[in-house]
Structure formats: structure tokens, C-alpha cells
Image 1 (cartoon, rainbow, N blue to C red):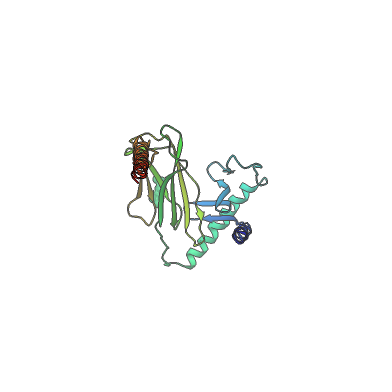
Image 2 (image 1 turned 90 degrees about the vertical axis):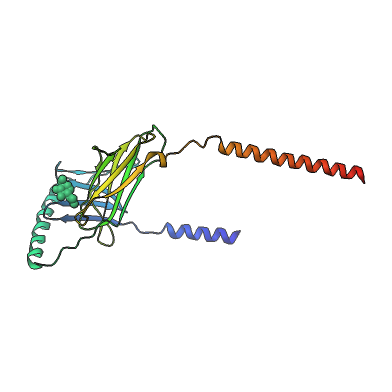
Length: 238
Ligand SMILES: *[C@@H]1O[C@H](CO)[C@@H](O)[C@H](O)[C@H]1NC(C)=O
């Protein structure tokens, strides 16, 4: 037992020893641009070039929400100029080199929280392994298009592809079917995933297990009674 404990504590100390990964991304294409600060696969901050400000998508459990210093957004805009100039120089230099196109390697739909009928929840469409960014994600409910979803900006993966996550607030109701459809340059038609509330909901276990348990218990007790009966009978005979 001591050895086991020692082994377990070793595993713990090793896993507590990992480094954190802090990244800053400046990226651009002919039609799009991105500035993002990330930590361990999560967004810390990004530049919203439509709203013209930095956005800090930190969850409510962050105790000390932080902001970058004044001028961070303006620096991001300036970096976009540099990025676009560099991109143009390289495109001119490497004319006729075909662009790389990787369709998403993974599209997954799931809920943020365990499903309870009638309780607000979030549907998540997780798209990964694509290049270039971005993807478009659209949602349907019972085959009708719905709006109100959000999508985060592309997060770079270690292999040079990207991940994007689209979220939709919803209230699970029996019989509803949702879908997310992913559009990407390398896909000829959208890649679609279905989410069937009924199949995923926590259905009431009903009387099945209780009845099974009751019958099993009864049969067992009958067996014990019969055994005891024959034991006593046998003793009386001898
Ligand atoms: C995403 O949607 C925009 C706007 O409708 C469109 O211009 C763009 O081509 C779409 N991107 C992809 C990869 O389909």
C-alpha cells in the first residue's frame, strides 16, 4: 500500500510540473485579420476590428480579471498593416505556389452541461484541423435556420491548423433536433452534425430498475426461506 501511495504521489508531482503555454498571434489574410493572446489553449484577449477594441473573454471564475495596457488595440491595428505588407511581398515572391487547403478534420457537437429538459444550456460545435481560417458555422433547430450563436476567433493548433468553437444558447425540449453546419474553403458542401435532444437527454429511468430489483430480492428471499425450510426438515428427519 505504501508503494502504491508513493507511486501516486509521484504521478501527481510530475503532472503538477508542466509548463504553461502563453501565445500571442498576429495573423492576416486578404480578407481577414486576427490579434489574439492565449494561455493553455484558451483565449485571454483578442482585438475586435469591427468594434475597434480589445475583448477579454474571461470566464466569471477568474478572480483578478486583467487588461492589457492602453494602446494594445492600436498596436494590433498597426501589426495588421505590417502583416498585410509582409503577406503581399511573400505572395508576389512565391507566385503560382498553390495555397494549402485542409478541410476540418474534426467537427463535434455536444452540450456544455448535462442535459435537463427545460433547463437553459449551451450547445457547442467544436471544429478543428482546418487551414486556412476561418470557418463559418450556422445552426438550425428542427430544420429552421436560427441566429444568436457566437463563434470564437481561430485558435492555432501545434500542427499549423486551426480550431474554432461556435456556441448556441438553448433550452432542451423533448423532440427538438439541432444541427450545426460548417463551411470551409476546402469543403464543397457544409459538414453537418445533428444533435437530438431526446437521444441525449437524461431520460427518466422509470420503473424498470426498481421492478428488477424487487423481483430479484423476492426470488432471493424465497430461496433463503426454502433453504432454511429444507435444512430444518433434514435435521428433524435424522
Ligand atoms: C462565410 O460567410 C461569408 C459571409 O456570408 C462569406 O463571404 C464567406 O465566403 C464564407 N466563408 C466560407 C469559408 O464559406
